[in-house]
Image 1 (cartoon, rainbow, N blue to C red):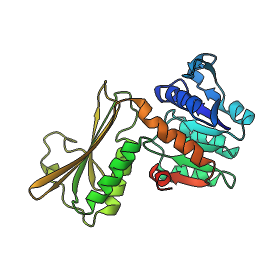
Image 2 (image 1 turned 45 degrees about the vertical axis):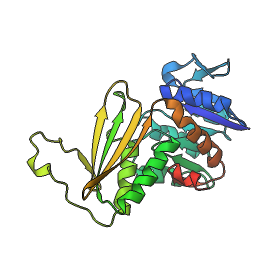
Image 3 (image 1 turned 60 degrees about the vertical axis):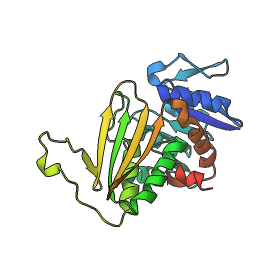
Length: 261
C-alpha cells in the first residue's frame, strides 16, 4: 500500500488528487495538508472524507515512507519540497514556477534513493502533444505557441508552454526570424520569447488548460492542439507518477519519461 500525502488538498487540483488516490488500487491518502482548510473535510470521492491538517512537517514525520503530491502555489512549493525531501520522502510535483536549477538543488539535498518527480502537465494527451510538436519542429522550424488557461493561474507562460518551447528549441536545426516584433504598435503584441520560440498566454474564466502549437511552412500550416476540459484529465498521470516515484531516484522531469517504460 502506497501512502500519499496531498499538499494543497483543498484546492481544485488537490481535491481531484484526493479522489484519484482513494480510487486507485494499492494506494491511499495518508494525510491531506492545506493550512487554509485546516480541520475541515475534503470529499474522498468514495463516500468518505479526509480532514485537512495545517503542518506538513507533522504529516511527513507521521508518514516517512509516503509519497508527497504537491499542487500548491509557487510561493510555498519550494519549502514543501525541502521539508519532504530532507526526510527522504519521494515527491510528485505539479506546481510550476520553480527553475530547473532549483529543482536540481532540492533533489541533490535529499538522501540517496529519494525521487523528485516534476511534470509541467500530467495529462497524457498533453505529453503526446509535446512529443508530436518536437517531431514536427525538425521539419517545420517556423512555430509559435498559444497557451490558454483559467484566469486564476499564477504563472505565464505556463509550465507546459515553457517545456514545449524548450523541446522545440532542442529539436529544430535552425532559428528562423520572428517577423513583426520590430513593428509592434503595442508592446508585447507579438508575444514573449522562450528560447527563441514565440509564446502567447491567454487567461480567461471558463478555461481549464489548453495549448496549440502552430507551425507554418511554404503554402501550409500544421496545428497541434490539446485541451483539458476537466481537471480529472490530469489524474491518470498523477497516479502513474506516484507509483513510479517509489522506484526512481534523483530529479525526473516530464511524464514522457514514464510513458516510455
